[in-house]
Length: 327
Ligand SMILES: C[S@@+](CC[C@H](N)C(=O)[O-])C[C@H]1O[C@@H](n2cnc3c(N)ncnc32)[C@H](O)[C@@H]1O
Image (cartoon, rainbow, N blue to C red; front, side, top):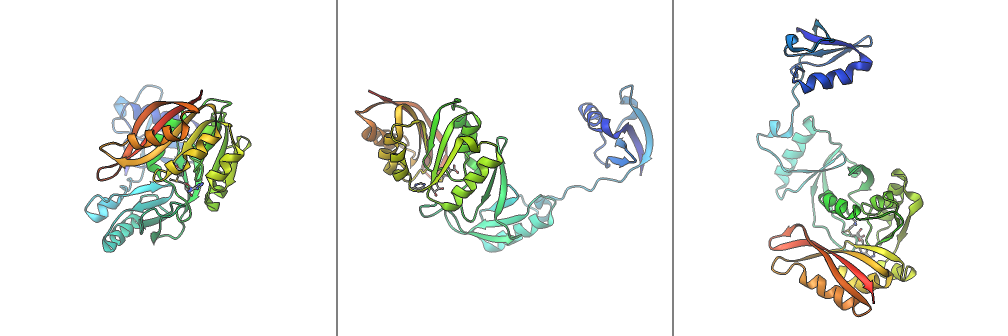
C-alpha cells in the first residue's frame, strides 16, 4: 500500500526514527523499508513532520502483528525466561504441552520450552525438567549488564534473585576480598569482581564451577576471580582470616556453614546470610545462629534484615547483612 514516508539516508535512519517516534509520528501499521541505502519510515501525519525531513509517498508492506502465546491459547500463560529457555511451572502435563506448543508457534523468541519436573533438590540444588520444545537446556542469560552461560539441567540458577544480587553487589568496593561459599555459575562473583574486588567462588558442583570460570572470562573479570570446586567448609580453612565480605546463599542449610564462614572472616567482615524461615520469626533463628558462631571473638552488628521473596505459604526467603568486627 502507498503511504506517506519520511525518506532519509540509512546512516540517519535511527536518529530520524527516534525523533519521529518521540512525536508519535511513526505509523506502526506499516514496515520501515530499506532500499538502496535509503530508509523509508511510514508516518501517520505528514503535515506534522518537522521541517528538514523529506516526505514522499511509497509502497510499503503492512506489518504482521506479533503473535503472542496468549493470542493462540485464549488465556495468558505464566512463564519465566532464562536466556532463550522458557520455563513453565504446570502441574498438568496436558496444559504444559498446550502452552509449549503455543509458545513454539508464536513470535516469542524461545529456543527451548521446559516444564518443572521436580523441586530443586539435593546438595547441588538442581531440578529435573521435562523438555517440551527444542532440546538444549544450555543458554546465555543476561542480568544487570553481565552474561551467564549455564545449563539449567546441571546447575542451580534463579533469575528471580537478580534484584537481590544487584543490591548486594552495589555494596562492594574496589580492592576488597570477597568469598562466595556457594557461588553457582557466578552471579555474585562476576559483578563483585567487576567492581574491583578480588573474589573467591566455591561450589561443590563441578559443572557450576566450569561455568563460573567461563562466565568470569566472558565478562572480562577472570584476573580477579578464583573458582574452586569443593566443599565450602574445607576451602574456608585455606582462606582463614581473609575475607572482607562473605556470601552464604544456601538458604536451607547455611547455618551449618557458619563456623567455616567465621574462620574465613577477616578482622572486619560483612556476611550476607540467606535463610528460609517461618514468617512469624524470619530473622531470629539466623541471628541466633550467627551470634553463636561468631561471639565472643567478633562483635556482631545486624546491618539489614531483608525479606527477599516469599518462598512457600508462610515461609520467607530472607537475607541478613551482618558486620563481624573482631574484638
Ligand atoms: C542456592 S544455590 C546458589 C548459587 C548462586 N549463589 C546463585 O545465586 O545462583 C547453592 C549452591 O551451593 C552449592 N553447594 C551446596 N553445598 C555446598 C558445599 N558444601 N560447598 C560448596 N558449595 C555447595 C550448590 O551446588 C549450589 O550451586
